[in-house]
Image 1 (cartoon, one colour):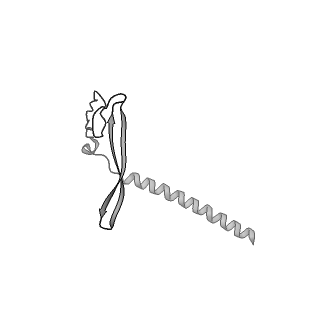
Image 2 (cartoon, rainbow, N blue to C red; image 1 turned 135 degrees about the vertical axis):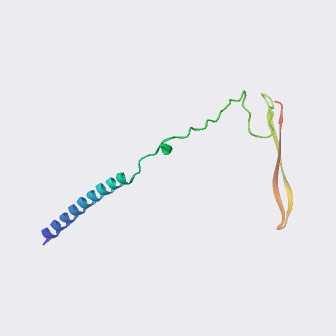
Image 3 (cartoon, one colour; image 1 turned 120 degrees about the vertical axis):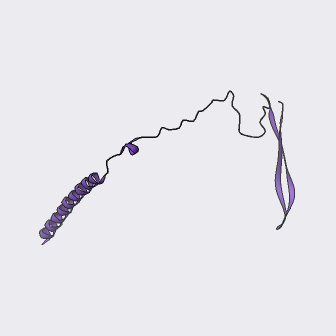
Amino acid sequence: MMRIVTMALLAGSAGLLLTGASALAQTSSGVRAAQAPLTDASAQRRPLRRVPIYPRDEWEPDVYPRYYPGPNAVRVCNAHYVQEYRPSGPVITPRMHCYWRPG
């Protein structure tokens, strides 16, 4: 009984493989037949637009302020707490003030 069930399963899987391969062959040939030939208008390609890129003479950072503080400049920051009045009540928040000083 076990041999009969095994043989039936093998025959069924072999049949599925054969029908799947023939179905794939039919769909690929059907796709080839369904494709329309290219016309002259569709075969022409539009030329790509070229955007000129000009190199900068020197590098400029994208931050404010845009100045050069010097070769040995030191950034000095003073931090303190400030009481802010909000609708929920007074809140203490940190504040920081920074500046460049020549080193």
